[in-house]
Length: 228
Image 1 (tube, rainbow, N blue to C red):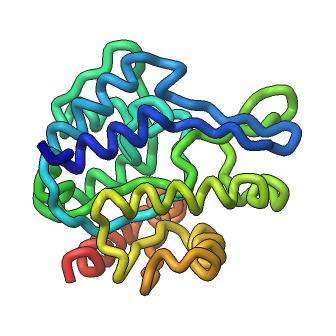
Image 2 (cartoon, one colour; image 1 turned 90 degrees about the vertical axis):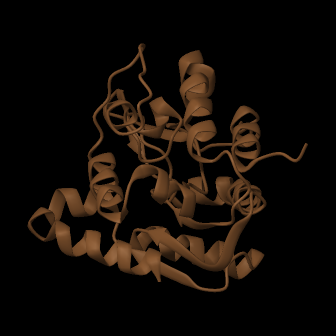
């Protein structure tokens, strides 16, 4: 029997590991190794929403935060929304992540979660959480925060994007979250010719933190771009 979209995503996630170098003071966290329940809920999520072979549009994030996909294994989905919207309860962790709030408000306006996920696949070019040491504690980091870090992870990111694309994603237009992220994805795209057109959308965290009063405008902008 042919593998479904869900089967293929789960296979990618089960085999996820970064074994390359990292600059000092950076670390990669793999949620699937750190918590067995993450693997469990991630599989439930993809079986629920991706149990088909449809082609989907691709939204590209940065890399998961420790409190969002770094816990649930589902991009832009904290445990609150995993339970309240997707009906999948996580026993071992409870997280609230502000990007997840925006994404699920946007999904509610799009239609419903099943409608949104039937059309759209969200993931990251670096699908594991990155942390950096700061004043003795570990904080969230982005793959582009440090030039040496980006140079180390670049090939892994190209390889990961190719794996995502092989799920049956529409490469004629890709939706990139965050302007800075888009600058770096554009470099990868010049090298690896992955996407024909890149459309940049403001990052959910930026909207929630700085543009909350205009949130509905951004939700409308997302939906207009994704539904055309």
